[in-house]
Amino acid sequence: MTKGGTTPARAPRSFNLADVWEMAADAVADRTALVVGDRRCTYAVLEDRANRLANHLAASGIGPGDHVALYLENCPEYVEAMLAAFKLRAVPINVNHRYVADELRYLLTDCDARAVVTQPSLVGRVEAAAVPVGWPLLVTGDDYESRLADASPERPAVERSDDDHYIIYTGGTTGLPRGVVWRHVDAFFACFGGGDPMRTRGPVERPGQLPERINDEPFCYMPLAPMMHAAAQWTTLSRLYAGDKVVLPTGSLDPVGVWRTVEAERVNGITVVGDAVARPLLDEWDRSGPYDVSSLVSFSNGGAPMSAATRERVLRTLPRVVLVDGFGSSEAGTQGSTYVTAGDVAHGPGIATFDNSAKPTIVVRPDGHRVTPGSGEVGSVLAGGRLPLGYYNDPEKTAELFVERDGERWLVTGDMASVAADGSIVLLGRGSGAINTGGEKVFAEEVEGVLRGHPAVYDCLVVGVPDDRWGSAVAVLVQPADPAAPPTLDELVDHCKQCLAGYKAPKRLIVVDEVVRSPSGKPDYRWAHATAEKALGRGNGHGDA
Image (cartoon, rainbow, N blue to C red; front, side, top):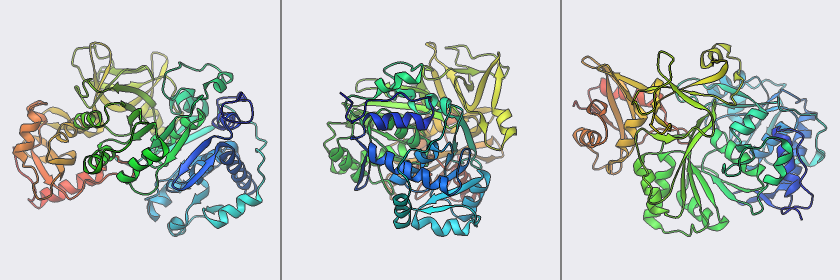
């Protein structure tokens, strides 16, 4: 008997991302693969449409190594286009759907796009970005459907390999976006779950083992992030490779819609991106809940830190779920996770603590020696194991961050951490976001995590601002929980000093209407720096401590 399909599971020829997908599509053809709004499709239908799109792109001149830009909000076509590109040995390129013409022009030029798939509401921006006339431009809707209808449903006759490329562009929250180039085989294991998305069955050693990894009972998964974000791409495809059902939300975050979808689709797991996504969900629960979430078994976080206060709220609100706090990056893949259940301690030192079972991870001092576990020393985090080839068209940055150590290749992640006595990694924050104040280093994410636990703080970002006495002073931009009653600087300082050394407490306070974040919930530190400097330069909105 097959696992919900009509064809015995066929072992993929390699760990190529298209080969693995086709294995799953054959094994569970009749299962629901994707739900997006009121649109639903089975594995067989998604496979048919991906084949037709691949054949249409091939007829338009797209082939191995060509880059296909996906300038789309969440929709079935996003997944279809990724799979279609993989089938041709082409490379799908994620493009932030909020980019305007200049940003779009930069990314399309940087990635050497050969085609663009977009939606009607974004066509004007593509045209304003001066896309070359020779590029195929495919717009979802009637024309897209007509082109698929005219294309062959047969799988393209392309010999693929583990060495085909997958590229994910970083968010560019602190600089220009860069394309991270992975080999398919490395991405499959480091990013796409390696055939074991829950990490419960152990490693796969050869492609022939993958058919038996198809879940007998499909898991229903919903990522609360746009598909242009690595976290959504990785978790979505890892679930499809396991024969599961994926529910993609549309539009901006709608907390009521999320809980109603959990009820209607019997969702088993959701993933959020830090407090910016988790807190609105919890607020809606407090306003209108409870909802029927008896199907929900996991509540995962990735892409941005989750504060201790929010972790505790999740476990109070959903005592039956496992809270999975993941850590990784576009350059490292998944590095580690922490699993917490009701009754466990939902907080600890730093912004997260994880083991390094998912990927070899070490912490090194400036002199190159490894940090001694339990010493309290702070060092740079290096990730090993399966890594990308580097950055697209940026050999200098590749050489800077991908280094050799004792004959092995390591990624300098930019994160700072200490090592607990048991060997677990205690993450403190980004080195690039460290504030040197009076000779002491303060990590923005660590302070933010504590401040979000204050009842008057809904959201916040911490940055360093110039200061005659301290060199840099810790400044916090706060979105109040109640705009009519914002917290005072003294209140925030007192709150911080209960958990952190006094020098980490903020010395400046800027109250804002809203903290600006990316569509996926990641912080916009460029906005935070500019806003703080503007406010403090006018002498408004701040105080001294």
